[in-house]
Length: 282
Image 1 (cartoon, rainbow, N blue to C red):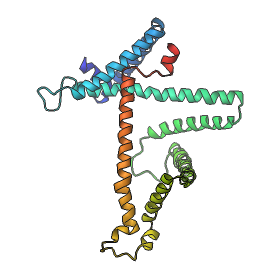
Image 2 (cartoon, helix red, strand yellow; image 1 turned 90 degrees about the vertical axis):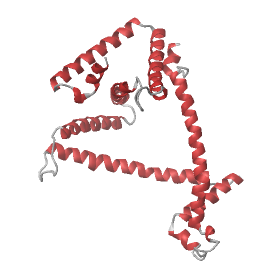
Image 3 (cartoon, helix red, strand yellow; image 1 turned 180 degrees about the vertical axis):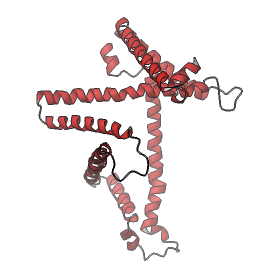
Image 4 (tube, rainbow, N blue to C red; image 1 turned 135 degrees about the horizontal axis):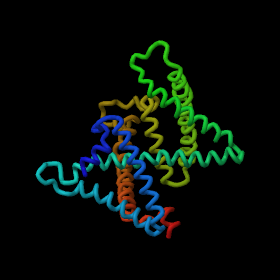
C-alpha cells in the first residue's frame, strides 16, 4: 500500500509520462465517482460525521508521528515513512482550493457583468486579466527558453513580460504604497494624547523614530559616546526601548496568539468548531 501511494504522489517514481497520465486520469475519475456516491448516499448528518472523522484521523496521524517514540532508528517510527506521501496527498487536495477560488470569483464577477451592476467594468477587467495571464503564463512556461535569452524573444514571452513586469508588478507596488497613507492616518488617530497610556506610547514612538534617523543622533551628539551619560543619546535610548520594552511585549503577544491558535486547532481537530457548513446542516 505504501509503495502504491508513493508511486502515485511522487512524480519522480513514475515509469513514464503516459503511465503517469493514465494514473492521474483514473485517480480523478475514481475521486469524482467516490464523491458523487458519498453525496448521494450520505445525508447531511452522515456528511457531517464523515468530515469530523477525516479531520480527526488526519490530525491524529501527524500528532502520533511527532510524539510516538522512535523504535530501531534515532529519528523514525512506524509512521515516519508515510509522512511524505500523505503530505503530497494533502498538497494535491489543497490545490483544489485554487479551482474553488477561481470558481467563486468567476461566479461573483460573472453575476456583476451579466446584471450590469455598478462597477461591472471592473469585473470584466478581472476576467480579461485572468484569462490573459493564464494563457500567456502557461505559454511562456512551456516555451522552455534557455539563458541567456535571445535578442529576439518569441512574442508570447514579450506579451507575458508586458503583463507581468509592465502591468502587474507596478500595480502591486502602487497598491502597497497606498498603505503608507493608511498607516499614517492610523498612527495619527492612535497617537492623540487623551490618556496617560497614550502619552507614554507617544513618547516611546517619538524616541524610537528619532533614534532611527540622523536628526536624532545629531540632537544628542553633545553627549560623549564613551561617558556614563551615553545611554541618553537618542540612538541608544531608541535601541533600548526596542530591545527591552518592545521585544518582550511582542513575545507576550506572540505567546498569546500561539495559545489561541492551539486552542482553535484543538477545536477544529475535535470538530467542536461549528462553522457555516455545520450550522446549516444542523
